[in-house]
Structures are given as C-alpha cells and as structure tokens.
Length: 262
Image (tube, rainbow, N blue to C red; front, side, top):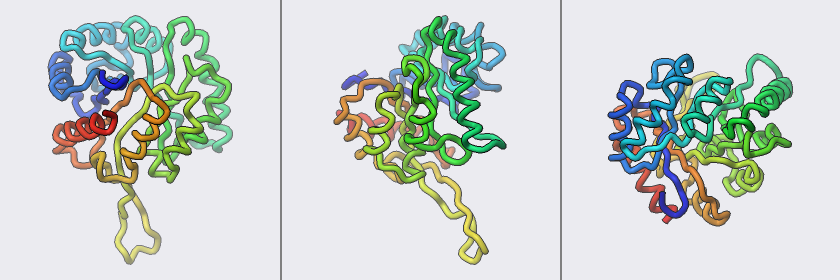
C-alpha cells in the first residue's frame, strides 16, 4: 500500500494457475492483493466457497497477497465464507433481465434488503458495480439503486471505464456516488465499429485497451479521487481485448496508476 491506496488485481485471466502460482505472480507484478473470481472453473467455485475460500486466503497470504474482494454470488454461503476468510467485499453487478428498468430496480432493492441481517452479522459488504448495456450503467443510476442502504453493507464499486463508455464526466459521477463508494475499478476501453461503412445500421463493440488509450482519462479520474482524498482499494481489472499481452499491459497499467496517485 502507498499513498493510502491498495492496488488490487482482478485475477480473471489466470483461472488455470494454482493458488501458489497465482500468489507468486501477483506479488511479482507488485499488487497488494486481488479480487478473486468465485466462478465455475476458477480456483474457488460457488459450490466450494465455504471450504476453499478460507484456504485460498491462507495460501495467498504466504506470498503476501490479500483477497481484497471476490467477484461472485451474494448468497449465504459466499457471505459466510468471506467473513471466515477475512474478505471484506463481494463485488456484483445489477443486471436488468427481461423486465423493465423500474421492475429490475425494485427486484434488486428487495434482494439487497433481504441480505442485510446476514451482512451485518458477518460484517461483509456487497459492492454493486456500474456496467454498461443491460445493467445499472452509471453513477447516477447506481446511487438511486442504493439509496437508503447503509454503505457499510451495501455499497458502490465505481467502474471509471464503464462510466466513460456511457459518457459521464468523472467529477460528476464521483460527486453523486461518493457517499456510497467502497471501491474503484480502473480499466479502459473505447467503442469500435463492428460493421462496415456500408451497413444499413452501424453496430458497435467495446475494445478493451490499456489505461492510457481509452475513453476514460485516468489522470482526470485520479486527480478527482486525490482531490477527494480517496483512501482505499483501486482494482485494476486486467481486461484487454489483446489477450496475448495481458501481463505486459497490466504491468504498464499498474506503473501508470502508481505514477498518477504519487
């Protein structure tokens, strides 16, 4: 940790590594901790979370690496496992299914409310991340979704890249979400045309790139976080469309982030 920032790595690209290998890799890259996917096919799966998450935390600690958050289910087993493993945050996203937006908002709020007693008992936080497309996409919508919840238990994970993809300035986004903020995600991307110039209607996809190259101006984001004296976890999500260059790109992005926060 430096300057009050804990740098975390989302380890989604390294699902085939053993926990020992993963810990050594993360330590060599220079991160303080990780966000561990609790998903099928990863080192810890939803069905084994109660048994294996505490063991994973112990194994990673041998390399000086903490599990600062998990990305996975928000059910009883996962919440209790996080408490037992000393993991403070479960990151999730607010998906909108085949319902209207307001119906989804009502469903999600009821889900969070139903988890409150267990979250309080276990002292674990659900961190809800903004995500473009069929999710709650920006800080304004996320703040509305989480209104009235104690941010010690139901809080916001602000993803600066998804915010940029939907066009909100970071100072506006942080002004809205600041009271509910528990963690910041840093990555970068831009919209890339997926159809040729003669298509009847243009279609677009996201190209995930390095921190210096996308729509999200990391210097602008970090300046605003520093102005607000943010101290906490910054998770670099290692999401790159160039899958063959992940380790090089994440090393460069961590150095860039450290330079900006210095």
